[in-house]
Amino acid sequence: MKPSSSTDTDSLDTLYKGYHGWLLVWLRRRLGCPHNAADMAQETFIRLLTAGAYVTPREPRAFLATVARRLMVDRGRRQKLEQAYREALAQHVEYLEQAPSPEQILAAVQALEHIARALESMVPRARQAFVLRHLEGQSHAQIAEQLNVSTKTVQNYLVQALLHCHAATEEPL
Image 1 (cartoon, one colour):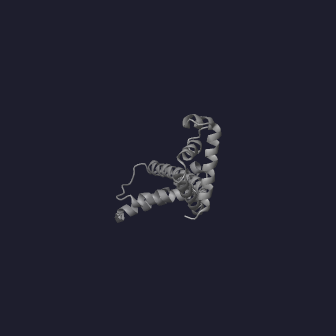
Image 2 (spheres, rainbow, N blue to C red):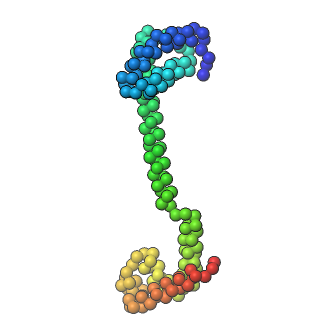
Image 3 (tube, rainbow, N blue to C red):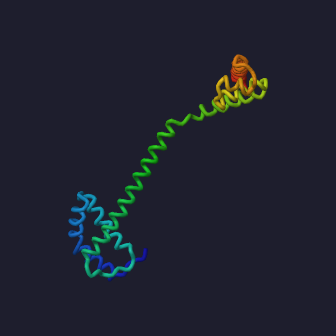
């Protein structure tokens, strides 16, 4: 931001004194709120003051209206962006409220480690039946066909595997 020369400041002062009231009325009609109109009028003149070298416009009203319109567009974009941010933040908060706690995550990881150890120490056929049923979602009949055994044998394998996993989750790591 460059400091304005005294003639620039004098010109802006004259513009402000001569057209601030008009701009305020113009903005009130467009915004429908006297407080927002007053804020926007001030922002318009602040924009002109900080813009650098100032040249007195031939049509001051059109010039001020153009600057104010651009500021309203900028404000509208900013408000839309802020609204999108608030909505995304609200969704994130909802997700965090539904997310498991660190203690729940730790308990799940420990249970999975116990089950992994149990699977490693299981009879291969029982492990294969457990994996096919619980990880691949196959039916008892499909597992029986794949392992070339009866469905009763598959049921026995699954009971054996579940008992083995249950026993493993009771043991400390």
